[in-house]
Amino acid sequence: MALHPQQTGKVVGGKRIVPKQAKHLHCVQYSTAELLAENATRQNK
Image (cartoon, rainbow, N blue to C red):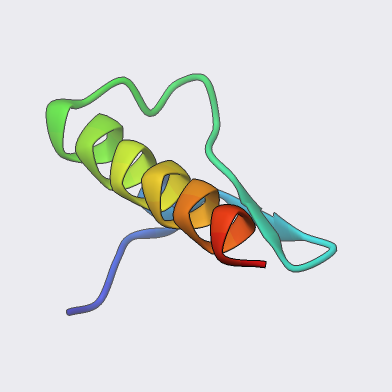
């Protein structure tokens, strides 16, 4: 599933930064899912 640059944002230091303009529902869901995944990864360490 290819994502538009606006959805993925800029990748800096391996972290994906979602631009403030990306307030579309699918962008928010994508960001939230990624944040949850990051939190789960940190807890597993």
